[in-house]
Length: 368
Image 1 (cartoon, rainbow, N blue to C red):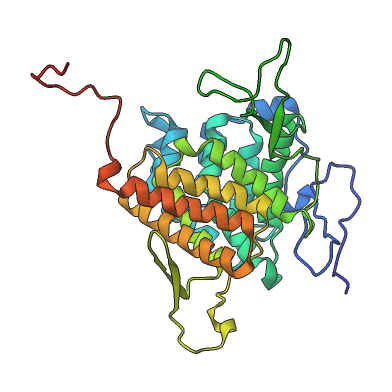
Image 2: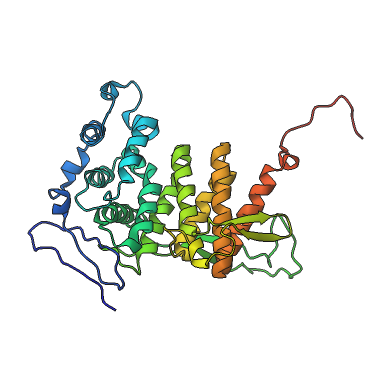
């Protein structure tokens, strides 16, 4: 099989290469001219202000409050949490041709994230669930997606630089050695130190200028890892958008999960219809490099400090859909992760477990 590809015209300016999905690993490169951008210099990048970003966005959206620039509060905070702006941006992103390379909103996202201003980068990350969700769902449709890919590559490049390409690891204690929390039957010896057991949370990163089919899950997964690191700053609406796309990605919305503590049953709402009819449009492959950050985000939505009923319900439905998909795919890692989330969410919602064990009980009775 072969993949349709095209190359960008040679220019004297730096190029940003992104690709559209095809059946092989060949890619299509686009230049920064697709965004009508000029080569950036450190001075121009540092002078990119919040007010300039708002003025640029106001030319794209239908309505933007004229008093936004004179807000007493932080304008970037207003962009992040204003429901009217979020609704307009979400509607524009969901248009059929929204991911094209000449899309003005994608160009705004790219320029805004490249500004390196943390508050403006949060605004871009707020819409990452929609960008990643639409991108992955439309890949199989062979639509122009250069705009979405440019934004995802900008986020990936940011993480590659901030991590210096290194893997994210955690030291797992060796339980065969005693600690302040437990004893061990293993006899202690002088100068007997436990070996470090390093678990890789996120593998090392390599710079990529294009999105190939073999790299797609990794690039989107790294973007979701950054989203997870900032998730406490994200509004509830952004998290709900993410949960909704998880259900679409699973392709298992036709199955209803009947779950109790010991048994799991599935009812096919499609009756005896052909199994292919159950697979919804938008179903994608779910490798572990993508499902791992997805599970972390869903874990925060279920068990995080934001006790929003709509968010918890949406996250629970997403976990059930992904659990159904993992059983269908016989994916052990996914089964363990999604089943654990379902059990933890059930435990957290049980009133018997809503006890603060650090609270000192008040009583007039002295127990000896």
